[in-house]
Image 1 (spheres, rainbow, N blue to C red):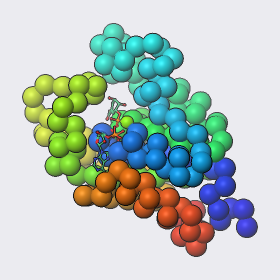
Image 2 (cartoon, rainbow, N blue to C red):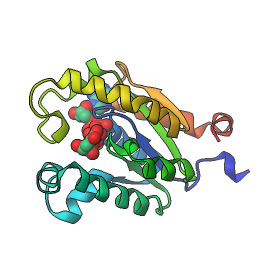
Image 3 (cartoon, protein in one colour):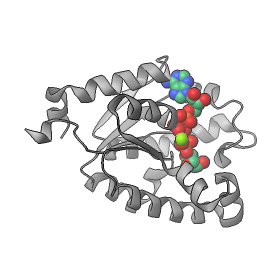
Image 4 (cartoon, rainbow, N blue to C red):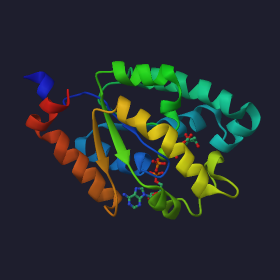
Length: 184
Ligand SMILES: Nc1ncnc2c1ncn2[C@@H]1O[C@H](COP(=O)(O)OP(=O)(O)O)[C@@H](O)[C@H]1O
Ligand SMILES: O=C(O)C1=C[C@@H](OP(=O)(O)O)[C@@H](O)[C@H](O)C1
Ligand SMILES: [Mg+2]
């Protein structure tokens, strides 16, 4: 019963900034022996500039166009763990791509208090620079959390669980065929 195992299906991680999509995703890929690829890192590699600079030069709209094209391309991969950026669910086109893929879409949930702590010293995320981080994160959570729920097959809350613990939680779940059967 092929459809009941994880096999070579992609795992696509969604969730807010600081949920652990990049760090936990890497761990999941190691544990499941899949290739790891992160949309932001891939955009930086291909353009040769940082996400911050893409936002500065092309504004958020330019970044979103690149992000959508990259998502569409990477969903063609096989046997990969794909970490998205927190804003992926903002575009209808992206939501459709995520709902249509036969990969498993995993929502890493987190709370603003944890995001603030984890991203305290962050300088890489253009939407978090300057004052009023808490309010900005709360506003994004109100807009986006229902959309993550809408596209995800399964969700995991991190709370105080470490990145490694989160990866283990996800992998244990995905290795259990009975649970997988209930997801799809
Ligand atoms: N479950 C977790 N517990 C503690 N720290 C975490 C956890 N998940 C992520 N982090 C830390 O938070 C920061 C942001 O994580 P990252 O993987 O870049 O998140 P995302 O890609 O979802 O924005 C990193 O420093 C990472 O080590
Ligand atoms: O939430 C967002 O809109 C963004 C999240 C970032 O990715 P992470 O969620 O990996 O931090 C990155 O794509 C960009 O800074 C915009
Ligand atoms: Mg990331």
